Image 1 (cartoon, helix red, strand yellow):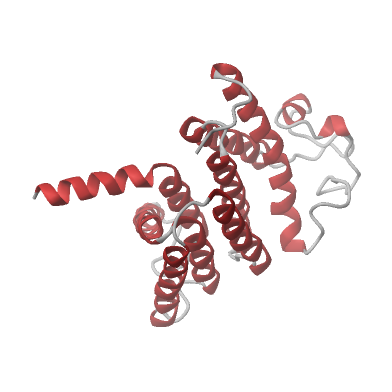
Image 2 (cartoon, rainbow, N blue to C red; image 1 turned 90 degrees about the vertical axis):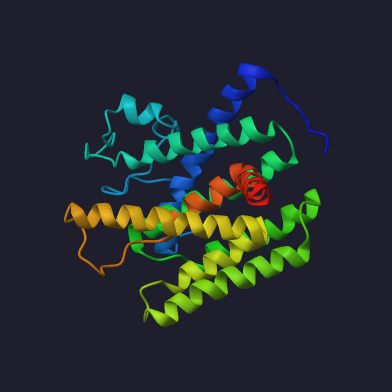
Length: 260
């Protein structure tokens, strides 16, 4: 597939990173407003403490936070450092997508998927919930972009969605709710983006990372045995890794397997 290139080298990397910062600012809005059932597109941004409407100069990604020393212009209350961190994370992940795909249709697919993953992961951290409306838009985006790019096989996507969600629903039933239904629905949406092999890898990575982090939190006495931990962020990590690097991992696995 022919890539459409707007700029090359360092210029392209800087452009993508700055664009990621801007998108990250919008993702912060989504993370804050979706749990409150507020519209994410309409309405001005406000300080979460004093509810004063923010000006354009208050909304420059990262820079406004640093310039104001992490405080609201009006009430001087501290603003969570997570706002600039989400913006920086978005910029860095967009940059990884650019390194992998350059400016192409697959690059667009990658950054759209990344945006959904960031929103869903951070809402799950805050609320221990994964909202259906976010997953519906994510599933629609996967179907639309894969159709546009001609990427993958539709039967494979559907099998991945059903198998991934079915597996997590089975765990939800066996454990009596230790695994959330939202995680299973999340897996369904992911299958429509990744296909069977990459979905399996994404879930495998999610379980390994989740088990490792859970063990560390238990050792540090931050969590008790059996206490639930939001699983959405681990699924999001596994999905991003699988989309960007997963095919290399699978190719390596097949190479080792057939050698033996």
